Amino acid sequence: MYVPRHFSMTTEQAVELLTAAETAELVTAHPDGPAATLLPVLHRPDGDGLGSLLFHVTRTNDVWQRPHLGDALAICSGPDAYVAPPWLASYADNPGVPTWNYVTVHAYGDLIVHDDADWTARVVREVSARHGFDTALVDADGFARMLRAIVGLELRLTRVVGKAKLSQNKAPADVEGIAAGLRATGDADAARVAEAMDEVALPHAVERYRLLGELREGRPGFPGQDKSR
Image (cartoon, rainbow, N blue to C red; front, side):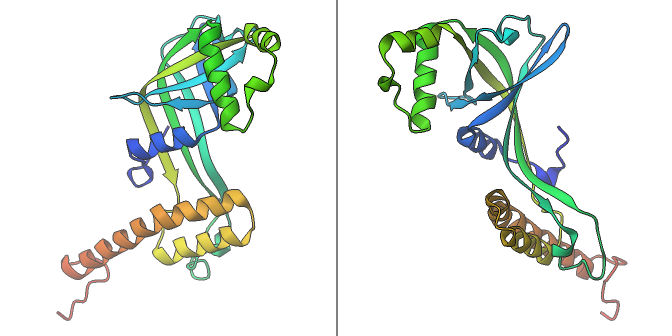
């Protein structure tokens, strides 16, 4: 994933998104080509590393049986939203084109298959509880039959790459205009993007333009320098 420095996330921010994620695209490489599977996901931390992502798949999905080539990849997406050019404060003087703001994390690691009913049962119970369902309501025989029909997967994380493209490279007034435009749409995802912009993009833009201002004032020949001094 291409990540310009001003759009990069810290490891802590990336892991925070993994913890909040409810689904992930699990991408695996095989001798006959790649496969991608959208799955419910749980992030399980460990004491000194990035932790693991836990999944389960139906036994008839052969992704768990096919030989894997190298690491697997899980893509966890945060909020995303369309950005309309007229929302930018600079649009009247410098019309631009639409873009898209988003947050995403690519998590890499070794994919471990758990063809183990007890391991998979713990994951299923935890996923179900997270969404408000108590698996104890299912009779024991029925639950056991369900477990025989699925297989557990664990992605033991070795590397995470996070990208938050939130207009950090824009002027502060443009960032504020985009955030206001997103909120005005009434869309929940757009509102989450606006909130992330307030937290991440606006402080970055303010600091960036402060530094640019200092450079203009202090560097000989810099465009915009006051040559009367």
